[in-house]
Amino acid sequence: MRRGQKRVFFPLLAIALCLCIASVDAGTTLQPPVKLKWHHYRRYTTCKYAEEFVRHQVELFWKEDRSITAKLLRLLYSDCFVTGCDASILLDGPDSEKTAPQNRGLGGFVAIDKIKEVLEIRCPGVVSCADILNLATRDAVHLAGGPAYPVFTGRRDGVISKAAMVDLPSPSISGGEALAYFKSRGLDVLDMGTLLGAHSMGRTHCRYILDRLYNFNNTGKPDPSMNKAFADQMRKQCPQRTKKGQSDPLVFLNPESGSKYTFTESFYKRVLSYQSVLGVDQQLLFSNDTLQITEEFAGGFEYLRRSFALSMSRMGNINVLTGNAGEIRQNCRYINNGKP
Image 1: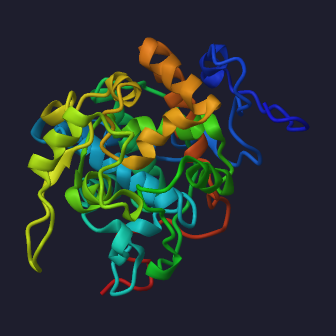
Image 2 (image 1 turned 180 degrees about the horizontal axis):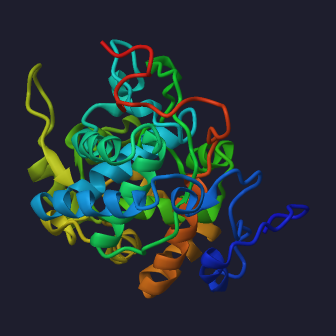
């Protein structure tokens, strides 16, 4: 816990406190002010089974397409790290956040739409899109083998979504730049090292790694931190782009998980063996704190599960709207007075 920070203790998150990364200075619970509540819908609203309704729909989607976990993780990150966890990423519009270049290829919208449709039938006007996104992501992570962490609820939905607000960084940034970005959102080095573990599943376009494969830091050579055999393998999947209109293939962020879309510690083992796909992931080796985190998680899946539970809860607490702020959208794609 940071010096001078008042401890706000939640028993359900206490499991995260026994992490063995003793020398890393990191938060141990939700960052204040904590405006959300555990079991908000069961205890304080007429939609007592909201979480069960969400979980059932996620299970249906996951059985049809296991990539839903990776899609929802990226969607939640793209929401929370811009204006906060207010579901602004879900809003449609010619200049909304989802139209920003950094958000190209986002998925999971159909799942959120379906969950909202079910909840509006069961208990109209009660469950926010922001809470649906957080709950659905938690349930999808659990189905993929990750932790079933508590999601504190009571968020309301934002009414503004502008592409110009999206400042999500390039996956080729340095470790220092990545940490500064996480800190600007109230998170710390352990949160960063943990949340990058979401890259244990999912895919990315080749355009995000071409610099590592062919022209690292404008040297005309590959990234020297990449395992040579792995770099050769990736170049076969991502040929150098030499003409306009050339295809931009998708590659798995963690080939060991691949199409199984499983949440495991293998991502961190690949970092240690210099086989990360994204440059920002490989940067975990190049500071004492993130190296220690990587070694801990590579050596013990339970450490990763516990830390992931806490860091997801901390990310879900970024700049939330509660009380009379925002609204409860009837349709996650439109603000209430702006539906076509």
